[in-house]
Image 1 (cartoon, helix red, strand yellow):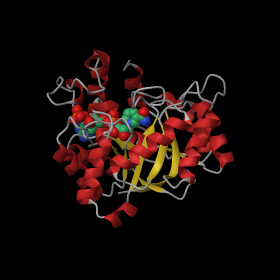
Image 2 (cartoon, protein in one colour):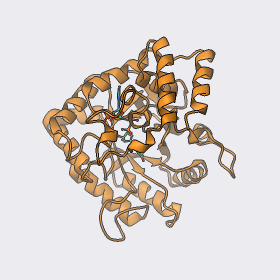
Image 3 (cartoon, protein in one colour):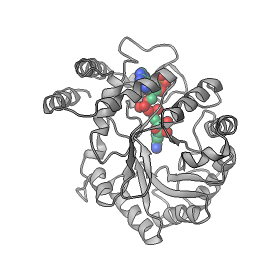
Length: 328
Ligand SMILES: NC(=O)c1ccc[n+]([C@@H]2O[C@H](COP(=O)([O-])OP(=O)(O)OC[C@H]3O[C@@H](n4cnc5c(N)ncnc54)[C@H](OP(=O)(O)O)[C@@H]3O)[C@@H](O)[C@H]2O)c1
């Protein structure tokens, strides 16, 4: 495993991190998820990413992860793991179960720790910006969580470039610097590269300027940037499941066309398409780690292979850009 420094912090993260959004919930086979986590750790993946609502049902991924930790990771191994959780999306009924209030964030962090059987998480995130709560309140809640010893670092997710800049400044003033940002970023989703309408800065610029790490989520566009859908929608794939967030109608003709063409470039590079999609992100030194999901040990091993070929020629990059322009 390659370990990269997270922004200007003291923390190193593996170039590949594993998320438990899909495939680790109450609807999934526990032993399959357990095998993946054990294998990931054996391969040097030290970072596991969760959130209060991962499942389904919400909370069950944290519960299952807690069971796996108890069964397979003796106490001393806690110091070899970076575990993150988040709060922001709907978790429980009533007015205090989502968004960015102090009430919600602190209660949710406590619930996550209980579900996972942990004393603290390594990183706690505000999962999304709340348009109706002052940023000061949300950031002060993150700061409190750290000062209470319930998290070591804090992060932001789904904040745009301008919101991120504001949040980073508040966190700096509070003495709890923002460690990391978790945006959606892949060959198919590139908003982090686009300048903000008012500040004219991209999210990646803001993170670099402030020494904050970047951990793109859904780097395979939920599986589209792999061989998964090259010949239809296979049984058991995310797009085939009623609870999967990848909807069949997202796999358009334009996307499939692009996927097939990208696959040809990947073959020439002697990589799988998934490996190429991951190395394409990791070639940018502003990217600390890519946050993948997998439904099997085989997929995980395949993805780890991206680390063998991270560099790109100019010709490869422009051929990829040409394909992505028409991907819709
Ligand atoms: N902060 C946020 O708002 C947010 C939102 C979404 C996700 N996340 C985080 O990001 C993590 C990753 O998201 P994601 O699961 O969407 O990531 P992803 O890596 O883009 O997609 C994962 C899916 O791709 C398929 N796949 C992976 N490797 C493959 C391979 N080598 N060959 C063929 N197919 C392969 C699998 O699909 P099948 O299941 O079909 O096999 C797998 O479930 C989440 O677990 C979560 O921690 C955060």
